[in-house]
Length: 62
Image (tube, rainbow, N blue to C red):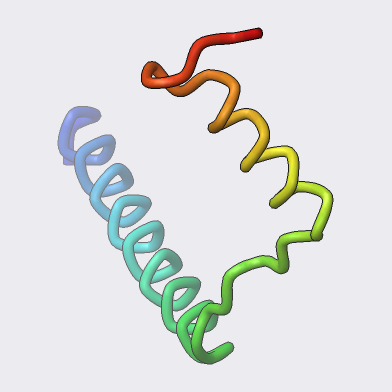
C-alpha cells in the first residue's frame, strides 16, 4: 500500500472511533435521567422583576 492509502485508512479508523465514542458518551449522558432546570433563588427573581419593570419601554424612570 502506498502512503496515501495508509493515511486514508488511519483517518477512517480515527473517525469511526470518534463516532463510536461520541455515541457512547451521549448514551451515558442520556442514561442519567430527565434533566431538571437549575433552582432559581428568590433574589434573582426579585432582581429580574425589578429590572424588567425599570427597563420596560412602557414605563418612564422617575
